[in-house]
Image (cartoon, rainbow, N blue to C red; front, side, top):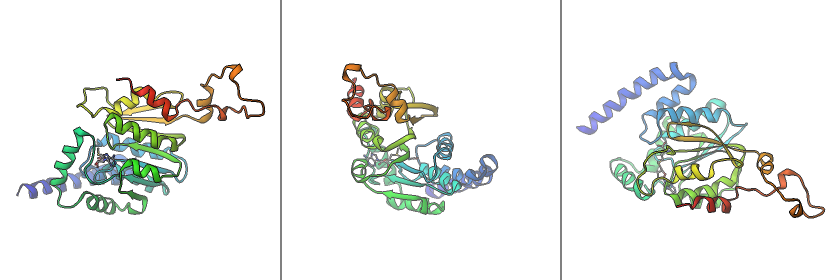
Length: 273
Ligand SMILES: C[S@@+](CC[C@H](N)C(=O)[O-])C[C@H]1O[C@@H](n2cnc3c(N)ncnc32)[C@H](O)[C@@H]1O
């Protein structure tokens, strides 16, 4: 009975969003409405902002989402691609309710209330939104997926394991693929009290998302939107003492200067506590 009531409420909400959002958000309204009725952790304002970020990407963008759950944010990302007429969204999620110590219990609890397995739910959601052709699923851990990944990335949305170690590992493995100017969106980064083991994204932004490697564009609700700076800008911030300058014959072009924000440097900087 309660199940039926919940379903009825969801249907009414869906109908309202479907009617109103296209008036409010134009063509993107259809996808925002579809996303709004999918259970998830991304707020409406964040869904709008994710879609807006996709609009700014170069042609044929490659977008990677770490942590998809039932597809709520994936709809916003893939819907924005669909409206552009190009782009692909790679959703990396093990679909087994894994996560940091704080989240995993919630995921398992939510999963137990679903009638279908997570992956099946995700596929149905994306298919119902008419976006299957834009979405590529990597049903595995973010570490395993990174080991197989080879392509430059235009936008990375981080929303998987939120422990400090999990976030650091995901960042170290995935951020080297970010193109110059790529968007890095990181969920759950508000300056607030966090449950134990759940503040990895907040710590990452505080310690590592800054010049010369990144410029923060804006924060929408809990999501920080940053851009990978260009190689020239990164190199320009590198002070190379004259006596340690490149050996004779080596290129002195700025783009050949050492990359200050290499994974190991970041790791050192992040282990503050
Ligand atoms: C916060 S939810 C994602 C929410 C989704 N972006 C949304 O819009 O609602 C995090 C998802 O990432 C998955 N996850 C957590 N750690 C992971 C890991 N190390 N590898 C793959 N998936 C992981 C979780 O099981 C869950 O499905």
